[in-house]
Image 1 (spheres, rainbow, N blue to C red):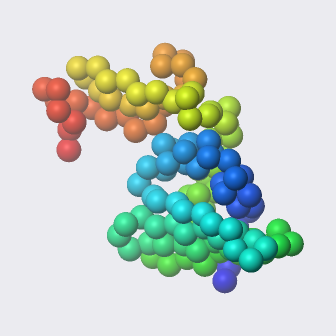
Image 2 (cartoon, rainbow, N blue to C red):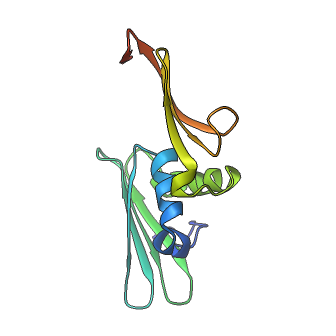
Length: 128
């Protein structure tokens, strides 16, 4: 186990808005959380070759184990930080805009809020 994980699992497990925000900001990783006998656990994977297991015991000690080319525990932490910098948006603060030229997700305001997943469109179809 690597004792380098800086995020307690309570907010991810108890606050659906945080988990939803992470799914918007880090949409290529999957996160599941569960309560254990006095603590919490999070499973993180990218659907390919990287995974992380993050465990928090009853005393709040958090450790992460991860394998693969990506460091998913660190990506989870950076996603959490990005969600907080974006003003901790709740589920209904998010939106999606699609124009003839592009498609993207945003929080708080479609014009001035932070954006994620900007994809260019070619002929009305997402570019590869």
